[in-house]
Every structure is written in structure tokens, then in C-alpha cells.
Amino acid sequence: MSASNPRIADRFRGFLPVVIDVETGGFNAETDALLEVAAVLICMDEDGQLYRAHTHACHVAPFPGANLDKSALAFNGIDPHHPFRAAVEEGQALEQVFQPIRAEIKRTECSRAILVGHNPFFDLGFIKAAVERTRVKNPFHAFSTFDTATLGALAYGQTVLARAVQAADIEWDQSEAHSAIYDAEKTADLFCTIINTWHELQSL
Image 1 (tube, rainbow, N blue to C red):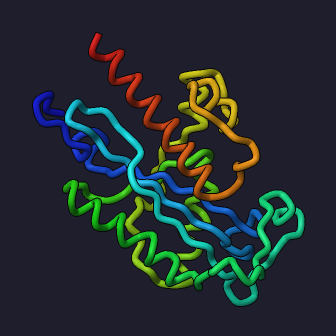
Image 2 (image 1 turned 90 degrees about the vertical axis):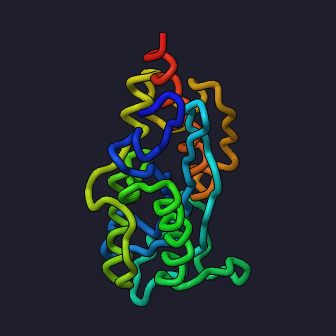
């Protein structure tokens, strides 16, 4: 990575990190509803520091025949049939979230996006299942991810998102947790903080 003109395309082997968080109607990506999806773009400044950029999110209508587990809905507080959710069908939701990701991949000259998440196998699984159902083109790497649970354990000895965020001196409001937008933005802040700290240590 050039010190005079750092590029995010050079930082992660051509991959663009994008933070994803989903809220769902259960734990089985094949049968349970995708209810919320949020994507946070990560950008790099002229000093090579990462920062949280734009957030793109949708409420998603359950796909036909989707399972809605009562305990999952009680946990995330989502009423899938609330008249003011303004939910859109899966294909439209994915296109709405993926379009700015594709544009950022092109703008930064990256090869594709890589999903950043807290235990991201869960989020990637639901994204891939929704892609399979809708045939929307997926901008993400098929299996590689960046996991802030692992990074949080390395940097702060914490694997729970709330605890890792607080250990990084980032504000956390428990009443806002378990919405896709809030969790994605806090995950993005945590990811940027850890990567930037490592970058600074390398410069010493």
C-alpha cells in the first residue's frame, strides 16, 4: 500500500470490506424469514485510516412460506406484519442494498466485496439463501469473511459485540441493539477501530 496515496483496494487483497447485519425470523437460513438487512460501507482516508461511511438498509417482507419463530421475534422485537414497516420483497431489498456496494466496488477499483460481521457465517448464510431464492447477483465473496468476534477477542479479550464495542471506548446503547442498522454501524466502528489501531502499531 502506497504511503502517499493509500487505497482500500490495496489493503485487503482487492476486497472491499462491507459490514452486514441481518435480523431474521429464526436461525435456519433456508427456511426462516429474512426481516431486516443493513449494509455499512467502509472507506479509507488519505492517511490510510478506515472510517464508517454510508449505511443502506431495508425492512424485508417474509418470503412465501417462510418460517417465523416466536422466540426469534421476541428477541429482536420485530413484528413482520406491522403496517408501518414499509417492508419490500427480498429481491427488491437485495437490489437496494447491493447497488451502492457494486458502485463502491467500481469506484475503489476493488475486485468484489467481503462481508464483515459479528459471527458473520450467520449473516452470510442468510444473504446467500436470499440470493439463491431471488437470483440477484451477489457482490460478496462466496465464503471468506472478516469476523469482529475474532478481532474483538484478539484486541480486547471480548467476543460479545456489546462488550467488545465498550472495550474499544465506543458508545453502546443496549436499548438500540438488535436492529440491523444499529448493530451494523457499531460493528463497523469496532472493525475500523481495530484495523486502525493495528495500522498505527505497525507504524511505530
